Image 1 (cartoon, rainbow, N blue to C red):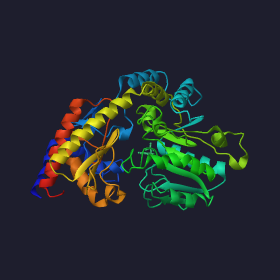
Image 2: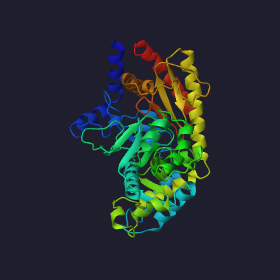
Image 3: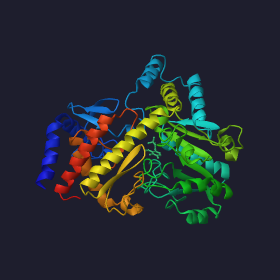
Image 4: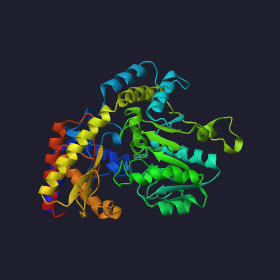
Amino acid sequence: MAELDQLTQAYERTHPRSAELHLRAKELFSAQGATHFSRVRTPFRPYISQAAGSRKWDVDGNEYIDYVMGHGALILGHSHPVVVEAVQRQAAIGFHFGDNHPLEVEWAGRIRNLMPAAERVEFFASGQEANQMGIRVARAFTGRKRLLKFKHNYHGWADELCAEGSAGALDSEVTVIPVDDLDTLERHLSSREYAVVLIEGGGGRISGRVPTSVGFFRALPELTRRHGTVLLLDEVVTGFREAAGGWQSVVGIQPDLTSIGKAASGGLPSGALLGRADVMAVLSPDAPRERLVVHGGTWNAVPLTCAAGIAACDLYRDGVPQRLARERADALRRQGNSVLRRGGVGARLYGRTIVHIYIGRLDRDPADDTDPPTTDIGQIMAPEAAPIHKRLDLHLLTRGIASMRGEAFTLSSAHTKEDVDVTVGALEESFQALTREGLI
Ligand SMILES: Cc1ncc(COP(=O)(O)O)c(C=O)c1O
């Protein structure tokens, strides 16, 4: 317990200006001063004032190797010079024309080149907006209402998208089932009430914390087609992060609709819905009135975002940033797991370019540690583990590592071998501290 208090005290001592900002923020923002549920923390997350490449710095001058990476958006690292140059050039000649402009055509064309399923493209301000529109388009196209989605998948916070529901959210037309259960899925789809099946590419929760078998993804296009349901693949995280063609290119499927966001615009806010021309024809003013879907949005395809998106997509095309991020992730997993094994710690790292931290029972110790050490999703998502992850997050922060909630490390092409070595050292020390504290 003494050590628990010491850690918090030491953190507060080295973050005095963040502490001051946190006090002011608590008077402004309802969620204990945080502007996103994942940033709510005791005592507080640091207040960041600058970032570059794999690093960021807080207002007290503390340096971090960053593994939040813009909630997964920054596969190129912070402020990639090519994207910065494109944004600066565009900022000088207009943020927003409120009109058609060439950059939106250029960006959409590049997206289609990367993802051939994008016969048509529709732009938004965020990933969840793309998902919301995907659901609406599917409803208009099929004339059906129901949405089927999967447990522990995250698609945004809007009404029907919330992972575990929320006070005030309307979701009466939603069915939630576990992943990897084709029989249950088919039983629901055969009712022919479902407009759309929505699933996260790469597995649930930020690219595979909850794994989903490749076979399941591969079965979805035929199964949904047979029952007249639209398949919407949420590639908001995996789009251009997993591979130049996204998760769909990795598993070899062509969904009816795909949502992207995050990395697609190189770090500026965006979302896009991509898909079959016949399905997305409900967005055309020529569609019959009872099928017509109207789309507004002040921030759709703003020139600044398009400029960043074009620069980023050009960098994604040859797959080099994705390969670099994966190589660093592989090194982090391998080296991290080797210290966890050596220390006899009940925790393992797994995943692809986002490396997840599992703490709990080890049912197996797979040689290929892209897989978690248990197939029990209840264990992976165990609520009892949440305070331990938060505590790990604080231990890592005091050692100069900004993880994603103590649950994951998001890699980018800017992370170096040295970053990985430092991170593994900090991880080892943090788990030793958790052991001393009796938390694991
Ligand atoms: C898989 C997935 N889909 C959709 C979203 C929502 O995207 P946005 O936060 O841009 O609305 C997220 C956000 O983390 C996500 O992880």
